[in-house]
Amino acid sequence: MRKWGALIAISLGSLLFLIDTTAVTVALPDIGRDLHASLTPLQWVLNIYTAVLAALMLAAGSVADRHGHRAVYLAGLGVFAVASLACALAPTVTVLITARGVQGIGGAAMAVTTFALIGSSYDGRDRGIAIGIWGAVNGLAAAAGPMLGGLLTQYLGWQAIFLANLPLAALAIALTRTSVPAVPGTRGKRFDLAGTLALFRLATFNALIVCGTITAGVFACLVYTSIWLQDTLRLGPVAAGLAMVPLALSTFAASTLAGRRLQCVPPRIMITLGLLLGGAGSALQAGLDNDSTATAILTGLVVSGLGVGLLMPATGAVLFASVPAERVGVAVGVSTTARQLGQTLGVAALGLVFQAGHGSVDGLNRVYLTTAALGVIAAVVAFTTIHDKASAQV
Image (tube, rainbow, N blue to C red; front, side, top):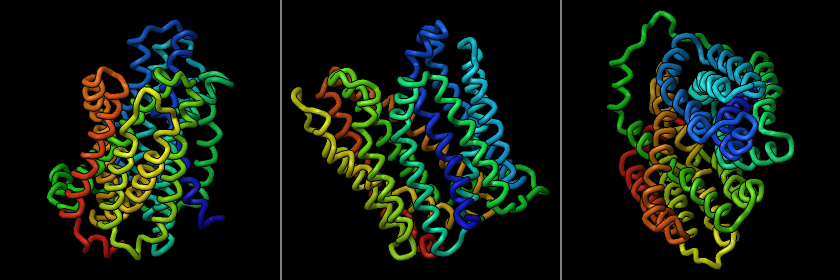
């Protein structure tokens, strides 16, 4: 149990901070009714969490490198749990927004430490397996968040989204204390801004940042897929979430299998193939018309999920191999911030594309084709820029 207890503890943290990024979306109408909130404060219930996450990623990574990733991870879990309880008990929307901001602080600490903890807990083939499962959990959480949020809100109330975090955080804390080794940080060093810009002189690191930012568009697409499923096909939040489950399942399966093959296939090839599959999946979802049903996007979702599943463990492994050990926390902070920014910008940019098609099925088709083109561009960047010598260290 001790061997894989660390992976369970680390994966739980990823699950918590990622699900709370998206699960609250479907609960906003109920929150508005219960707390008598208008649209503007409800938007801040969502935005404050991601804004704090993005703002603190780099600082949290630096603190983790200096004081130890395990200690910062445990602190993040504790802050996240307390803030989740405050969210569930919030009597007004102002209190809820404040608690969500505190959640973002804990989430940032968890986000920048999980990958580094895998690197310090496992090596060799076990590390590849652990990275694959961790990547699978990340993909599953990102895709399944709206569905879980819909289920909890519909049957237990929106407060259940936050209360469910408490036992999971408690379990993660207990397993971390017993199963995750404590590796000292570089306490004597101050924050080295010049050394952190130095990361951007690494071609492989830059390629990973570009690819991560672009591929966030796959998840940005889900916003407009959800709009189509609910507004056009008139599916409820739970049914709409279930319609996107194939993406989550194929991501989980591909990521788990990819983790086992990291030492056999050059990650550059795996990353390039993942990007191409992500683009192909988006292209396969295009071609919708007014008579299309939810099954029309099934094949595309599965193919996109396979691509994302290949990407997560491969990009993680290359990041760990190409960045100095003492800067892993900062590097993860930069890459996670880039993904958050990419998804935010992706939603905005694809929204313009969607509206250019008058918000209809034609607009959704344009969104899918745009994402497919971005996938091809990212694949070219990955294949021509990522060095195999970094892959050899995986």
